Picture 1: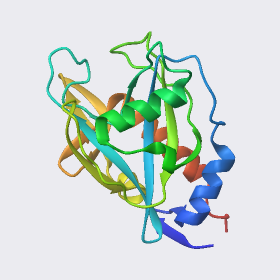
Picture 2 (picture 1 turned 90 degrees about the vertical axis):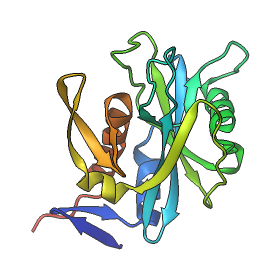
Picture 3 (picture 1 turned 180 degrees about the horizontal axis):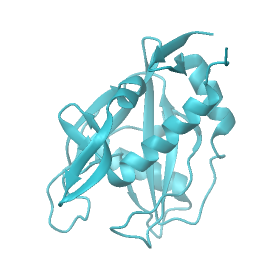
Picture 4 (picture 1 turned 180 degrees about the vertical axis):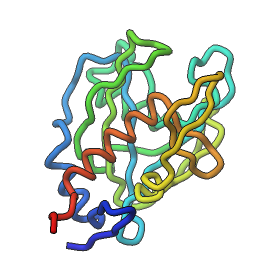
Length: 197
């Protein structure tokens, strides 16, 4: 088993991490939520990277300018949230999730901005790096390794309040996206903790 060690904790290499995640994530099924996002992972070297997107500035979007995951609100024609995340990811990024591997879901997460809107995060593994074509809702994107995220934990001043955040590629990842990433990292850290002694 390959281990990458940072600050006394270890991360399993991507093959181990994927299998561990499959064992601890919730099954891919519908949930009581009004939206869904895709936490897209891809292999890079011996580790995993995650896709982050930046929402375009839009006064009608409560998450305007925030770092996020592809996804959005469930529509009445969506059979379930899996269909929602497939549709929204395709619309926003051009990525077709039907060719990717759904590993499972995290817990439904809510935001103080829209507490009535639960968001179901789907964890999805891309077999290869997908071509990305952003629509008008997004303005940029980048892939970042999970190991780099762990080392980028910090805080940021948001609207006069200090909040926990990841500081990556000159961007601040906070709020809903931060909590989802912490949930994912926490599962990996628990599954891949080194033996004591």
